[in-house]
Length: 75
Image 1 (cartoon, rainbow, N blue to C red):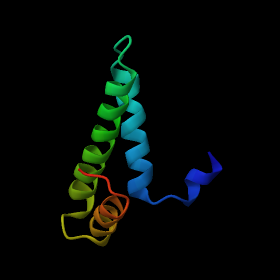
Image 2: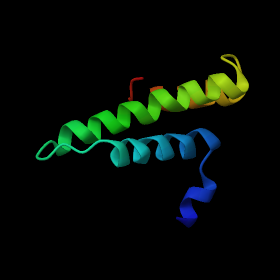
Image 3: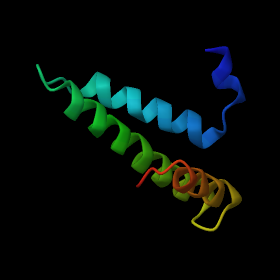
């Protein structure tokens, strides 16, 4: 938990939305699907969050999208 305090607002939002997805949906014997779905929703919801609160051209948005691209993730 203490390591999360060093994360950016976008990274914390991604983790929150990811975990909320796990708490919202459960499908027995579908672990890989649920994990992929939670990862997708975590990223997509974080982008929506940043867009809503800061706008599409904000530094927070461009930094987060750059981090996603650098890590090889898609959104």
